[in-house]
Length: 463
Image (cartoon, rainbow, N blue to C red; front, side, top):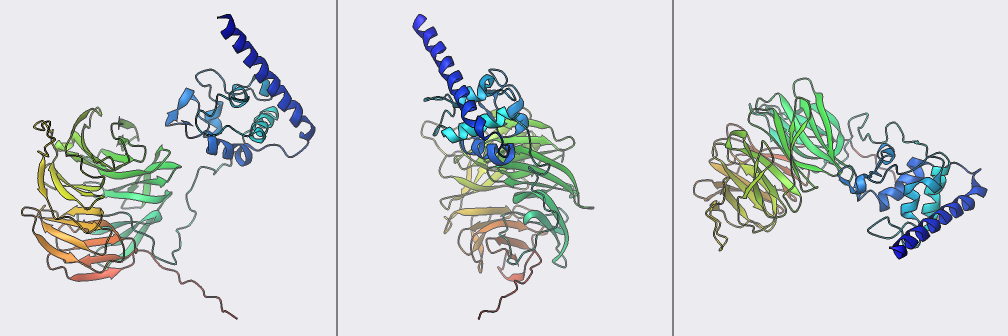
C-alpha cells in the first residue's frame, strides 16, 4: 500500500515537474503567433486521439474531435483548465516517459505536447471556422468527365430516375431522359438513394469517408431538403423506407444498422450485432422486421421496433456486397464478393442443425464472372438482374433460375440496377458514369446517356 502510494506521489511530482518544465520551455517564445486550435492542435488529435475519443467511441467519456467535445468533462473530470497547463488533466495524460494516452500507437512527440501545453497556457481559445464542418458546395459541381454512379432509383410511378453524383443527386425525366433537378447536399459521396413509397420524397445516405455519415431527405416536387442528419464518423449505406413511409433504415461503416424517424430525425433503433460494414437494409414482415446484409457474410433478421437480433437468415458463405427484397414475398436476393447470387427466405433459421444447413435458401443462381455489385427485381418479381465487376449484366427468371438475357457493353463495374415499374426497361450504371437503358427480356439496348452535364476541358496549345 505504501509502495503504491509512493509511486502515485512520485508520478504526480514528475508530471507536475514536466508540465512546469514545458511552461518554462515555451515561455521565451510566448510572443510568437498564438497557437491555433484549428490549425495546430486539431491535426495532432486527428492523428493520435480521435480514433478512440469521438462521439461514437467515447473512451473515458472524452471527445477530442471538436473543441466543444473537448471542453465537456470526461469520466475523470474537466479535461483542461484554460490558462493553467499544470492543472490540466489532458497534459497529465499525454506527458511523461510512459504517458497514459494514447493507449494505442506512438506517444505524442515532445514538440506536440509542448504545442498543446502552450495552447492551454494561452487560454485554450477556440478558432474553429464557422463553416469548418460544412462540405456543402455553393454551386452545383461541373463535370469534365462523368462521375462514377454508385446508386440509382426509379420513382414508383416510373416518371423519375434519381442518380447519385458528386455532392448531389440528379433527377432525370424518364420520358425525355433529360436532367430536371439537381439536389445539392453536404455529402460528397452518395452511397444509396431511395424514393418513398408514395414517391413524394427521396432518401439519401452517404457521407465523407472517415469524417461523417449522413441521411438526407428531399421533397421531390420542389427540391427542398427536409432533413440533413449526421449520424456517424464514417459513411452510411443501403437506405430503405419502411412500408408506411415514416422511417428509414441505414447500414454503416461502423458495423451498425439504424432506424430513423423522418418527421423529427430521431434515431429509434441502433443494432450493433454485425462484425463488418453493413451495405444494405430492407424491410420485411410488413415493416415490423428488418433484414441487413454485411461484409461479415451475414443477412441478419432484426426486430425493427426494438433492435433485437432474431437470427442469421443465411449460411455464411461469402462477404455480401448488395441485396434486394422480392416485391411480393418476404424473400431477398444477395450478390456476393466471390460471385455468388442467391435468394433466401427472410425468416428465422430454426431448422438449422449442427451441420449448418442452408435451410432458408430458395434458389442459387449460376456463379457470376466477378464480385456482384448490384441486384434488382422487376416490379412483379418475375425477373432478377445482377451486375458485376465485369462488363455485363445478367437477367434471370426468378422462378426457374434460367438466364433470360445478357446485357453487354459496360466498361467497368455495374454498381446500380433498376427496373421500370412496368418491367419494360432496365436501367444500368456504374464505373463509367453512363446510364444504359435495356429491354430486359430481349437484351436490346434502347438508349444510352450521361446523367450529368459535361463541361469540355480547354486544351492548352503545346509549343
